[in-house]
Image (cartoon, rainbow, N blue to C red; front, side, top):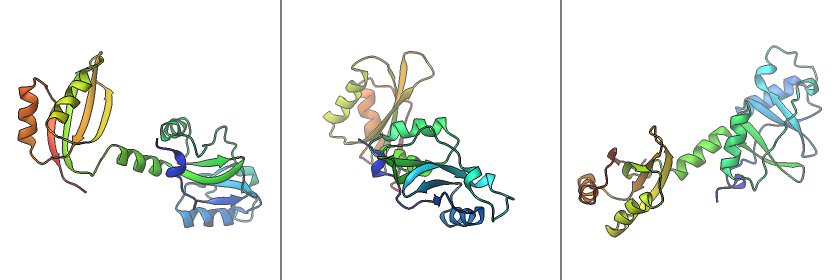
Length: 201
């Protein structure tokens, strides 16, 4: 299971509630961050956004610019749950909180990195895209064929097709011979959208 704790960063733009705007700007620049996590003795207090500090006097208190956050991430949340939180927020970074204390931060880049690895991008091999009926056993049929021909599956993605009752499955398998895989699928009456050889990055 892909959990937040495995992808969160422990180095992030941490802001003390007593900071001045000038100090906060500096911290955000050092971290290359669009927002900072405000804490007091590791207790989460809220978020500040870099774009709201533009043009503000450096000696002003940050307190008026702290935004409440109605949800935070827990280290044991899944990355799927975290992705939904990001969709519902306008932030690029979310705090990870355990027992009221900030233990890390997760960014949109971290989510993208995790999903990229989960999808097997950059692993090389052969990328097979098949449209299947959204019924029990349709995917198993394709996987059984790959198994019987000793083709190791590297990753798999499923998403709804444009046509109702259909799903598209993208399967990455180890191998170099696209023509051989195409022949195997044709012999077993498996229609496919595409078969592409991908180089390892």
